[in-house]
Each structure stands twice: as C-alpha cells, then as structure tokens.
Image 1 (cartoon, rainbow, N blue to C red):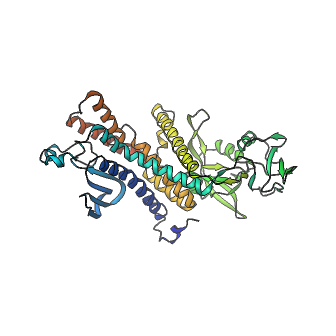
Image 2: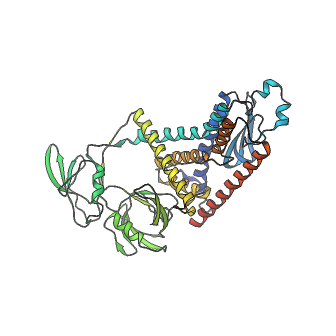
Image 3: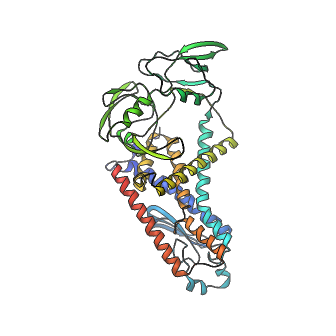
Length: 446
C-alpha cells in the first residue's frame, strides 16, 4: 500500500494532494521541457535557460554548455528559452540582440534554424510526454500482466449471502445455459436478476460440471475515479455496496439505475469493507459519460466503476506486447481527447466538465492513497493529457507554433513581429481564461 503520506504532517489535509501533485506535475513537465531541450540541442539550437517552475528562483546553476538551469518556487509549469528568443514562449525574437551577435553564435539561435528543425524541436515536447506514457503504461502491463483469454477463473468474489462453489482454476464454458466464449460475453447478462444464484458450466480437472457461482455484476467497486462524489465520500476499491438511500443493491446496475434517478442531494451508502458494514455520505452529481456511438452525454453519477465478480487469470506479457499496450492506451486517450474537444466546441458537452490544476491536484492525491500502480498510472494519464493539450492550435502552446510554421512553409514568409505579439497575447489570454474557468469548476466540485 502506498501510504507514505501518512508520515507527512498534514496541514488541514492539504499535503494529501499537494505533495503528490508536485511530484506528478514535476515529472511530466520536466519530461516535456527536456524533450524540447534535447531535440533543440541535437538540431544545433542553443538553450539559454531551462526552468522548472515560475517565480523566484530557488536553485540555479550553469552547465558546461552555458545553459542556465533553474528550479523556481511555483511548480506549475516550466520552459526552455532558446538563444535569440525575446521570451520563454519562443513566440517572438530579440532582433537587436541577434544582430549584435557574432555570426557563429547567431547560427545557434532558434530563429536561424531551418523550419523543419524548429518544428521538430517544438514537437519534441508533446512527443516526450507520449513516450513517457507509453513506457509507464507498458511497465504497468509488464508488472500486472494481461487477462488470459482461456476463461480460467483467477478469483471469485461473493455477495454477503452467496454460497460459492465456483473455484479458482475452473474453466468457464457457460452461464445459466448460455455458452460463454469470451469474458466480454458476460456483458449480455447485466440486466438479469441478481437475486438468484446462477449456474456456471465449467471444466474442472477435465471433468464437465455445473456449479453455483456469484452473479457476475455484483455491486463490487473496481475503480474509484478521482475528483468524484465517491472519492470525496471515501469509497474504496473492493467495497461491496449493500444499499443506497435505504434501497438494497443486488447488482452494480441496480446501483447505476438508482443513482440516475436521484437528485443531487446527500444520501447514505452502506458498504461492506473488510467484513465491516460502513455508512458513507455521498452526493451524486451530473457527470459526463461516453455513449456507445462515441459521443458524450451527462447523467447523475457517483464515479465508481464495475468489475466482474469472477475474475480471469493474468498471464505475463513480453516487452513487445507491453509496448503495444502502451501505444494502445495512448491512442485510446488521444481519440477520446479529440472527441471531447469536438463535443465541447459543438456544445454536446458542457464546459462545466473542464478540469484545472486544483482538480489535477486532488486526482493526484486520490491516486497516491489508492496504491503505487494507481499513482504511476496517474503520471502516465496526465503526461498524455499534457502532450495532447499542447498540440491544440492555440498561440503560446506548441500546437500554435506548429500552425505558424505551417504558415511559413506555405507562404514562404513569417508573420510580422507586431502580428506575432498580438497573436501570442490573444493566445495567452485565452489560455488564462480557460485555466481560471477550469479552476472555478474544480473549486465548485470540492
């Protein structure tokens, strides 16, 4: 259990999310900025400064290449300032300074680099985030393995009154007389009666048997999403939900259906945890969800995920398979990100769902208390999100720079310096507005 936070003196509970937030953000930002720095250096562009954070400088030193490395007091970002840049955004150049440089030094400025070298340098930041995410997702796959496809039972969980005869090692062949060919086939039984004990057809030591087992979709919590009513209420992974607002819960989908019909008011949830019945106060709220057609909608939710009461065995994966898992995870996130942005633009998804730094901080703290794997997963998740956000075609962001480079490639000239200053100012204003709005949303959800 990842419980180092219990050894930190807590000031009003703030360190439970501030400390993990600093760790997560520092790793993600360093990787992003180091991507810019490294590729810029390989492209012959000199970096004057590499800064982690903003505001007053805490620590600084100059390396043998003449780059000033800084760690500043506010760990909410970072930058690489290349030679000849007027500011840290690389959005405008200091022409007077460049013209005063010797020719050999002028050749090392960002402005003097060829267009493709500048584009590679800018693209390297998000790319570094994606590489980090692929590596981390792959490491998780190497450590935990992947579900076996042979339908062999790896674990069996039961409700409070079930007598379980299904055993670990059984190979499932059917469920209540219906053939089971893959684990996803259990999706067909979500809406079935959870009160009666179902019958599983299994192969045990080569012998075909029919045995009693648990309903596949018992109300057992498999995931608790950060910054949700469930996380705020103290719901934990593995909790068995017994009742909500006085109504008994027989299956996870009973829970889902009851929550969807509720108003946003505080109700009591009874859960079974480590053999003890606990009462938790939870307030459902409207949250986004992905529909079957890939679009998004909103419904009343508490923020927990379901898992099968009958779990598969896990098999180890090789390095190539792990890389494939990492690539698949990042690709899935990228597709979801694009759909989310399009839904926000078209009005299909409310901007109230935007999450800012406070939300990320709380999510980091929640993941740290859930375990090492969850915390590492959060690093990969945020790294992917930062990489994708930076590719948005907004001036000041990397995506905005790439759009300007595309303009230069097409029209064979750069925008006027005054135009660039206006564009960067508008981009910065837009970014700050979004940040403030998202932070307001975060505070309202606390």
